[in-house]
Each structure stands twice: as C-alpha cells, then as structure tokens.
Figure (cartoon, rainbow over the protein chains, first blue to last red):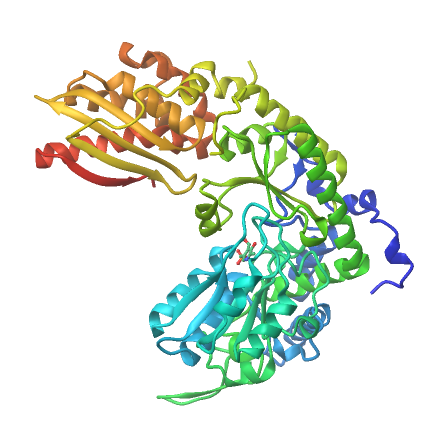
Length: 426
Length: 157
Ligand SMILES: Cc1ncc(COP(=O)(O)O)c(C=O)c1O
C-alpha cells in the first residue's frame, strides 16, 4: 500500500492512460470513450506483456513436472495466488481458489456447499438487486434440496436495500445470505459488514458477490467477516477466464469437491479417490496458468495506485456525472443512491420515451461505449417495470471530459427523439 | 445523411411515437406474443381472419423504436391482405433485412418499409426489426394448421 500522504493526491490519469493502448483507438472515426467498465475493464501494457512473456519464455504445465519450466510455472502461479490473498486481506493463500469467473465461484459454492448443507424447508436470503449469477445458481440448488429463496427488497429508484425487513427475513431457517457488495445495475454499495453480523447471529453463513466491489473498493475479508467472496479478474484489469473464490478454511475443508479430475486428487483407486489439499481440491484439471499469473500483474498495478485512491477517483467521477446528467436532462430518470458515498462509479439512467437500446446505438456512433439493457438483473428491472437502463461505469483511466462526451451524445439522442414529456420510461 | 439519421428516419420515429393499429382486436383468430430476450422487446399481435384474409390486425407492446415502428408499419402493410399474400410480403421484407435484396426491390405494399434498410448496418438490431414479422408468420402458420384461434409465443432467436 502506498505511504499515507500520497493517498491524498488524485490519480495521474494521463499517465495511467498511456498504459492502455486500446484507449487511443477510434470507433466510428471518433476517439473511444470507454464507459463499460462494469462489464469488463481494459488491460494495461504490463499485463499484456506478462501474457506474451509467459508464452515466449515460461510456458509449462503446473504441479506435474519435475522439470525446470514446470517448477517455474508453478512458482509463478502460486506467487499470483499469494498476491490475490494479500489483496483481499486473506492470511492463508490456500483459501484462494482460482476459478473461471465470479459465476463459476458462486456455482462452486451452490454445488459443493449448498447441496450438502441445505435441506428441505431451509432458506437462502438474497436481494432483489442480484446479478443472475448470484441468483440462478441458488434457484438450482434450492430446487435440488427443496429449499426456499427469500429476498431483501429494494426500496425504489434510489436502489437501497430495505434493511428494516432483514430481521423478519433472517430466521433460524436461513442457512445462507448471498448478496452483492456493489450492484452492477445501480451502483449501490450494500452494508455487507452489518449483514454479515446479522447473518452470523442468525446462524447463517454469508457469501459476498464481490464482482463489482473488489475491483473498485478496498475489500478485506477479515474486515467484512464474510464466509465466501467471489470475484472476476477481467473486471479489474486482469484477463478473462480467471475468477476467485475465497472462503474460510474450515468451510472449504468440510466441502466436497466441485469438479473431479487431475490435480484435485491425492490417491486414486478403481472405485474411489481421496482429495488433494486446499486449494487444489477445488482446481480440477489444468488451470488458466497464464491468466492467473497475469492477474497477479494486474493486482500489482492496482496496488501501486492504491485502492483508496481508486475509490476516491471514482466517487468524484460518479458525482460529476450525476450532477451533469441532472443539469442537462431534467427529465432523466436516474437509478441508484444520490449520495456518492453510498455508490460506486456506476451511473444507470433512462430518458423518458427512449428505449435504452436506441440510446446505446446512437452514442456508439460517437465512439462512446456504454452498456444498455437489463444488466443481468431482470428481477430488478421487473420490479422497476422497465426493459432496461443505459449504464455508464468508470475506472482508473476515465476522466470528466469523457462524461462530457457522453452528455453531448445524449443531447443528440434527445434531439433525434424529441420525446414529449408524456411518454413513459421504456 | 449521417449513419444515425439514416437509421432513425423520420418515418421510423413517427411510427414509434404514434403506432398505427395499436391495441388488440376483439375475438382474434390469431393471437401471438413475440419476445426478443436480448433487448426485452415484447409485442402482442392479434388479428381477425375471415375467408383467408386479414380483416384487422393490431399490435401492442414495449420495446425499442426499431421493433415498435417495424410492427406498426407491418400492420399497415398486412391489413386487408390474404394470408398467402401476407406470407409473401413477410418473405420479401426478410429478404431485404437478411439477404441481398434492397429497399428498392420491395413491392409497393411495403414501400414505407424501405426506411428500415438502414438497420442492416447494425446486426444486433436486425432482430428488433424482424420481431413482428416472424411473430405474424408464426401466427399464420399455426392458424393454417389448426384452422382456429391460436395462442402462442414466438421467441426471436
Ligand atoms: C455483480 C456481479 N455479479 C456477478 C457478475 C458475473 O461475473 P462473471 O461474468 O465474470 O462471472 C457480474 C458481472 O457481470 C456482476 O456485475
């Protein structure tokens, strides 16, 4: 972590931008304005170099050979695991399991933990703002064992959880609380620490979907006191195809394996096998070695900047964007908390009378990349009775002038659609 | 004309803001819900059919300007036509959107629909334009099989 003092200085965005070659490309003849970071982030040069260097000089399989290359590859991958552990404040690198993505991490828990530990009549408590990847795996698990899903409601467009319902929803039937730390559709940062306390008091475990929080906020598993944490490398400068499941050691030890195959075993006979130690018990088959090593480089990059600084930068951008959108489009519907302290760098909106897909197509012509649609949160969209929203999401390389470019492009949308005020939000 | 003006022609925006034949017909012989899961576009198409002819056709729904204007223009084009001619027209429209045919190849009945040719440049939006047309096609073929009112769902793949 950088020395105090340093943290007060803003990010050197111009310097950072030089590390991202893609930011100098053009789209439809316009400079790219990349505001779709909640979907996936761009990759810095050190990471791109790490990928090619690995294939040029180090490539080998891990945990299998006694030859030098294999030993080097194994050491590099384990070093990356150690970086991930340190990044999320986990003392024991063996509790960091490499998966493909957040989705696979959550499915691992839904298969290996939930199907074993839940029985008929038990309950899993979710929220109405969950991404499909923190909902559908629980639907499948609940169906398999006869458990029920309950939902903490979202209050309204300001997108906060109705915490007054928690004491009613958390009962001795609740075995798991599975909740997103930061909503990808609203930007809302949920009070995970308080919910962890409440869950534990009720005798339940808590899984935190950190897909949006780990890339953007300082996240410490000890501090949150959660039991499971899932996140994806590709949303934090890292490569696609690498995700993480962190869980408390005693929980992982008691869990059955997820996938069977090579690496995850200790001894194999014709009719049975015993399991390898953590974390390998949950890493069957050849892992994404290159991806994991490159992810370590992405983490170095983020650590060097400092997560507090990144959070401050995004808070500022979110505040700037919210104000600019409100000032320029008085009829715009904005979703998520008005207070930037309660939200991340995700701004979701609708222009009355204009479908988000039309917004997306038009701004794309100006080189502005935003996400439009339901953001894999159909439950939330149904609650708001909308087809979707347009969403701008920021990261370390975004600047206020890019928000300005979005605004200019949205003005074009308004001119084109000249939507009368009476038209409903699509 | 910029690409965007070419996509969002006045005719399209006009049909989006003031959809023609909006709503549902009473006692329909054909009733099909069409959905496009990618965009969340959704339409309910109802039609009155007598002696092989579409006497009345209505659409109501929610979605982007392309899906909703295309549906509105389609109702105008198909109203009063025989089922056989309607199927031909759907085929011709689809050839423009998916194949090599251009707006100029469209028959007179589909004249206005040449405005949707600009959508071809946006592959992800072509489905939006096709939703109503594939929905009506599904309704007609079900009706011809069963000879009675059908209630079905069409999903744009
Ligand atoms: C909150 C949240 N959870 C889960 C996911 C799923 O992540 P992935 O697609 O990398 O598995 C995402 C990203 O789309 C997300 O934003």
